[in-house]
Image 1 (cartoon, rainbow, N blue to C red):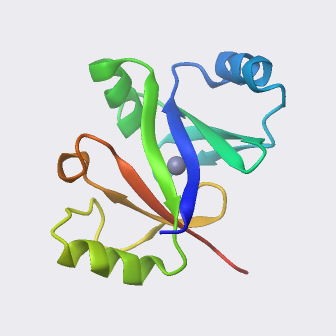
Image 2: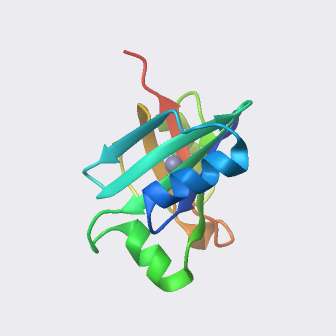
Image 3: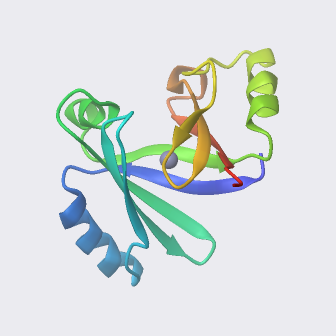
Length: 134
Ligand code: ZN
């Protein structure tokens, strides 16, 4: 894996949290995006080389709302940039990690993504992401 690409934070209200994080980080978010396949709205902040993704669930049937219900708002996942997501997924499977999806899927911010089950990573939800070059 190359580096931490972003840290995902589950929030109840994206608008409120955009205000909060723009005050905290001293920059405004550079994009918002709805990922309809996941029923989430996201926004992205960049400070230096680091990115923060805020996520709000749409409706009740989505991973973010369920996460907040169980654990409250907070850090939801850590995403690592990878050069070849298929290769990395295969490597992790061989190492015994449980992946949450069989195939990479299209995530926010123009990425192919795959998640590693938190049970196989000390309670941390790990996201692999590869930039889609088009
Ligand atoms: Zn993410």
